[in-house]
Image (cartoon, rainbow, N blue to C red; front, top):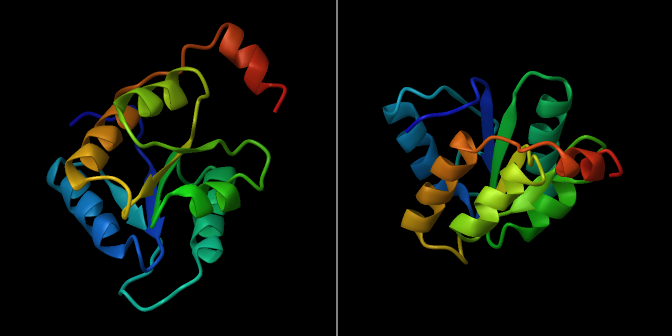
Length: 145
């Protein structure tokens, strides 16, 4: 697995905890450094708290991109997108993942642990990490966000 990004952070809620741990293990086994922002067990937590941790770390340029996992991916995306310069995308297949990076320059991938199979999630992570932003007409549109 290759990555365009050196500084990656990850977080989840309780519904996404096991998937977050699985993703983290795969990244580490592929010599990709990842910062785990929690939670550190399956106890019930509020997803906005963890989306905010990832969002703030990216805004502060302490991470290049983030990975957020909850039950559907939607709550994390809504929460993470509450800040300028954050483009969090729910990615549910290879095409949505590719386009989130190539056209939208997404800097956070949001995944639904209860909605998407683990092998699809892993494939989406691979695509997200290796896809470059195309710029051009897409940059003009992103500047309007």
